[in-house]
Image (tube, rainbow, N blue to C red; front, top):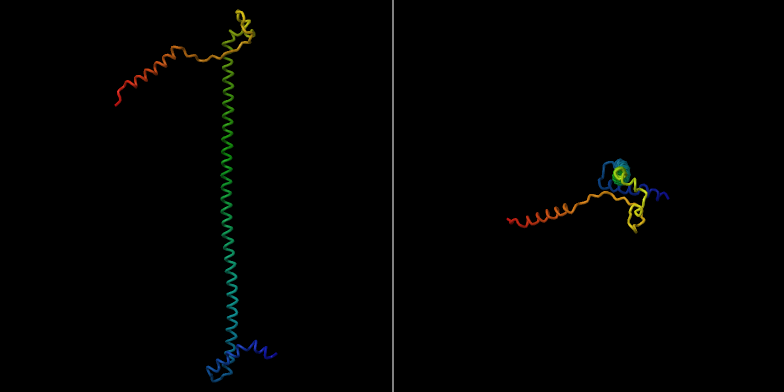
Length: 191
């Protein structure tokens, strides 16, 4: 049992130390062996610390890599979020512009309708005032009552709107004017 303990704790150290004493052959081998064992212990402790530091450094490096990857993901997510927010703001602005345009169109349409209504009322009033003299005597009578002809239909009166009527002369002038221009362009020599 003691040999196992000594073999485990001092086997490598003593074997290497005695081999070194036999190789160098110092004047005082006991003191040399003692100093060599102290130096061996110091070297083993230093190596263990170095190994521990290497493990710690490796662990820190892995953590730094993980943290770097996390930061890159966060930056990517932040950029994506900013892009989505910008797209959302642009969409809101477009919707607002569209809403304003629709409101403007509705307002313009309402104004146009009111103007048309007023124009129609004004036209109707002007026609009523101009035709009121003619209509006052015939306003409620049917065509049969107004006409003295036999077999006139018994229809109520229908008012006609005044339309600009082109006379035959003005139509003829337009047609003849176009033909003259046409013939004039045909008759000119081309360069």
